[in-house]
Image (cartoon, rainbow, N blue to C red; front, side):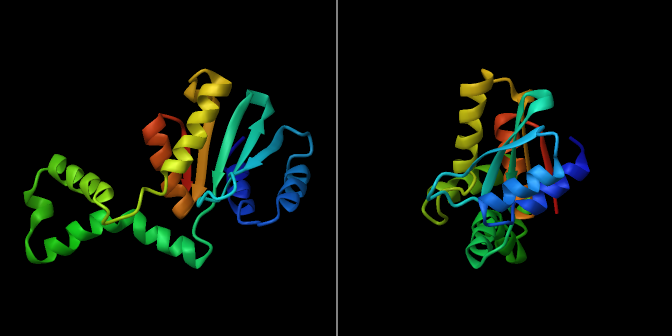
Length: 170
């Protein structure tokens, strides 16, 4: 699988009909090397698809980016904590004065203080972690997470947290 394949998949994830996604997969990968496994469970906020890539016996998660008004709101939620620091820095130069470790703790505290909802990416981390443990015994080389726009940001967050390869498109 190369970057062009991932770009096609990242475009395809915006499709809302799972049957249409399967048709596109069959047409784009006619040898059956890439198989649709599942969408996110009902009620999950993130729109992603999970695919099985037969040549390397690996799982690929493709995360959709911003497509709806609700997604726009999630974009804002993702960056709320750091935005507060940036706003304060307009009046007090805290970003260049405060140590990076303190800024990190600030962002984490804001995430858990109710100022901002539970992080959007937690559900995605859980989904990828489930595949890692149940299918691959923790072998992080068997999972790839890719996304576009907001999906790319979420893919990177998942990749950093679980130490899995990611590809993000902006």
